[in-house]
Image 1 (cartoon, helix red, strand yellow):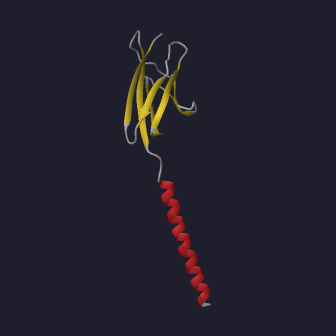
Image 2 (tube, helix red, strand yellow):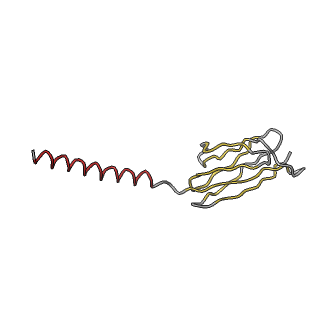
Image 3 (cartoon, one colour):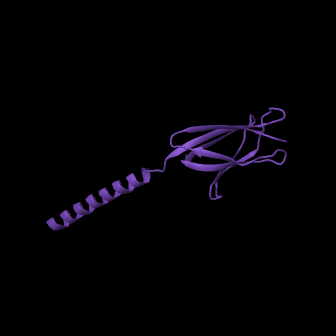
Length: 116
């Protein structure tokens, strides 16, 4: 009977340690940053609303996508630190790809004037 209790305590202790290790690994997340910006028409200076904006990895993978609000603003949160390409999807304006560098803990601001 005594041995059974010791084995049970040892098992509980091992599970507790294992759970702590797993929790610490899960909380060790990659460094993150944020990106905010605006899109405006170069010819009028007016904000470009409801434009699809995509953040693409340097390998060409879609990371995030959003739309500009009524003031032409967009915002991406929790972006892993690194280099990306920002693409605005609009048929009425030219949208050259823009290289964006996100750094850990930083809020990057970017404003773009798109040519008609």
